Length: 139
Image (cartoon, rainbow, N blue to C red; front, side, top):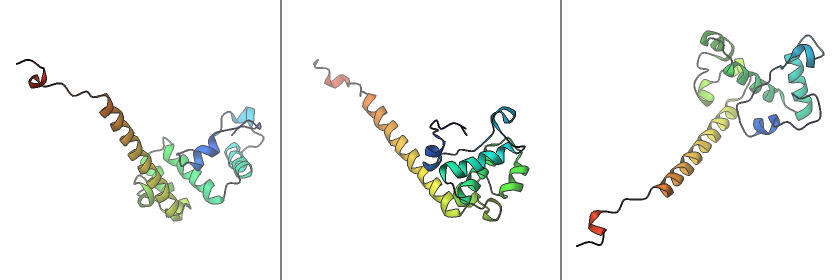
């Protein structure tokens, strides 16, 4: 998180449902405590008024995005962590409500449908059907 008042797109991305997470850039240069990641979560809570649920979702995203082995991800998130939406959520481990993850999944599917529709419209407008020889105007 930026320590200056410069605008950051992070909150906008998160509110729109993008899969974002918090991390530390250079803990020795930018942080004041021995726990720089905790500091980042505290700043997010304070700057953007995030709830505990918001912070838990960010932590879950962090584990999903990580390079940890499947067994480590399963330990932290639950055995079905790789399934979409509520199917992949173990609330006892993530503290993220199923309804939130279902909402995120549904929004993603709608976005994908919209993009596919737009792409198809674009392709349809660029395809020019070849004229058949019977319509060439020659006898």
